[in-house]
Length: 388
Image 1 (cartoon, rainbow, N blue to C red):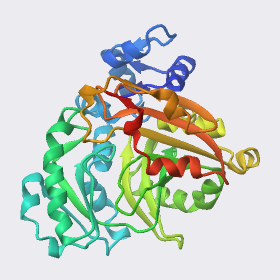
Image 2 (image 1 turned 180 degrees about the horizontal axis):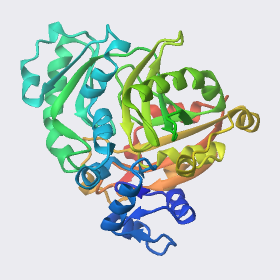
Image 3 (image 1 turned 90 degrees about the horizontal axis):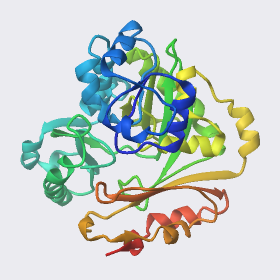
């Protein structure tokens, strides 16, 4: 079963929905995105009836914007409770507390941010909404003075953020302060099958411009990354799935590893793989259709994939718009100039910058010895592609 929602529905997802023939909830987004396709939409009552017929069947949404509807309509099963367990970072920290007994975290109300004594915090640390998305409202704190600056920035962001995403996706009443998890950061698309076994669909390395960078600007994947980290991440997923009793459930989990077997979970995003249909990178890189694999319980043959894709690196770059830019003054975007940064573009997705602080997503293939194409994007000023 599928629930299609904003902010983005990819062509791969549309084609997959048509081929699989699974129930797709009829809503405003699906009706618009899937018009002129072979997808037959399921009215709300029919969709709920089908879900109640088998509450253990796979349910996927491309966006956490669907959480409101799920809370209101699919409450006969465990799905809303399971989603909340992962969407609420405080609740998730409680779930895995004994796995990380020395890890510092503290939840508090938005209005309590001003009263925090920064000298009592484990600097460096990060402060973010308990229920968040897309690095919105996330701030790194690297000094006592930096705490005050972070709180002031959060205050100025809150009102703008409220206009962009539904309350269930990004709740700004509660925040969490966490100590920084050291090591390389990765994002893992995975699902739990009908027996509760985790299956990894893709592993993405998260590239940063600096130590205080918290943006989602660039991710990469390669079979080298997957072969190096697959088993340790799978063991972590097994433990989390066992504690949460997960079956037929997709997740997008962000992890840091110090390379010595020590893993720290940053957060777990339920009901979906990488947001904005960025999970499609697995299709370009490894011919893995994430939606089909989840619905049909398929497992990647990583040994065979490695033989085909050795030495290749696939990247995703977000054409983000700096918060200082008045998007209402943008006249157009020089997309060809943005594409020219890459020697082999796999897909360019143009995004409505009047609605989102993003003008594009781009997928590209580079060689393992030619990472400069991606790394230079970390420091690039994307305003040069905006025409005012």
